Image: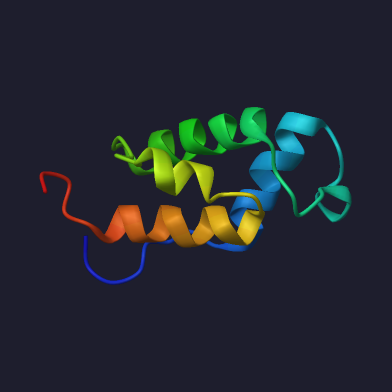
Amino acid sequence: MDGQPDLGRADLVTMLAELTTKPAAEVPDRIGSMELAWLVHLVEQRFDRQLDLTDDELAGIRTVDDALAVFRASLTTPADG
């Protein structure tokens, strides 16, 4: 994948709004394990690839911005290595 993936903070907030059935403006910045699992699932579907996240990466995701940084880094890594 060339450059930065087409994934922004607004995309993640919209995904979380879908899960919580809240308007995007009311989605909290902090995310828990259920929200994280939901985001990983939807990002994998959107980009048609499995995110190979380490336990440390997952443990470090506490906010929407954390998730965005980790997902973008994972998506810019070649799928087979």
